Image (cartoon, rainbow, N blue to C red):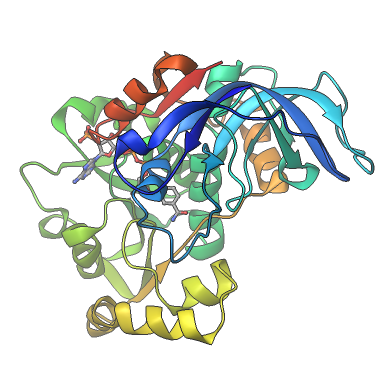
Length: 333
Ligand SMILES: NC(=O)c1ccc[n+]([C@@H]2O[C@H](COP(=O)([O-])OP(=O)(O)OC[C@H]3O[C@@H](n4cnc5c(N)ncnc54)[C@H](OP(=O)(O)O)[C@@H]3O)[C@@H](O)[C@H]2O)c1
């Protein structure tokens, strides 16, 4: 089969369509005929080698972090899925494999696609949806009445995070370009700051939590808008010791390295009396079922920006890497 393969670390030229063997489902694994796969910033960060310390891959490897498809076969011990089921998932981080006509995946990472979603819409939900859910529910413990700030509300994660925070009963402020203002309001944001003209730290104060999707100066600014004792959870800043211990289950060496590398940003948070956590999302079939249920109930909608044929995946990445996608960029098999 022809798959999109990461051959070595580097610029976009290191990804190529290559003939690879079709995978075979082992015990507790499911063979999927992929129908669509979504592109994510993590795909090009992995390609550039920026994550190699934290996410080891044996190269060459079929790339791709999330997909939707049809069950084409099951290994021994698979009880929850049968041939013909419509399913989707965020794949195992150390295996990848979504940019291919077929892949195998552990049944624990899979969920059934809600009836109201087609394959293209479904492909864009797992990674961004799980990230937003785990950050808001598990790290920020958002409850009704909270005021939550989400930077970069118009992108793949932001569009889902705004909706989930609103569903949890929070009042949401976000940053967006003027072109995206109406769009993020339609998803539930009640305060929208045009990041091209204004710094949100000059406008917002006494927030109960911040979800940082943009990093850089925004991350540091987020500390200034929080109540004392509140927390910023970032997915675009600096990994820190909890990231190593909890998300990466790493040993003392990496934990110590991240303690040193994150010392400055942790000190800046401490000086403002707030907490800082860098989070890596984790794949989970159970959490994905929860998201699928919200879609089914009409409480969460997916947003697809552009769809490319699989053969034009490189064009899809050129678009995504400009950094202005509204929702998800998807390739269709
Ligand atoms: N740690 C984890 O587990 C994890 C998981 C998922 C994602 N991430 C990271 O989270 C980040 C966001 O991911 P994503 O999938 O949402 O990316 P994305 O879809 O590529 O984000 C694009 C969006 O960002 C907006 N944007 C760009 N610069 C901005 C700024 N300075 N202020 C406000 N908005 C800005 C753009 O809006 P305009 O067009 O309006 O400018 C665009 O809509 C990435 O760095 C990704 O690697 C980490």
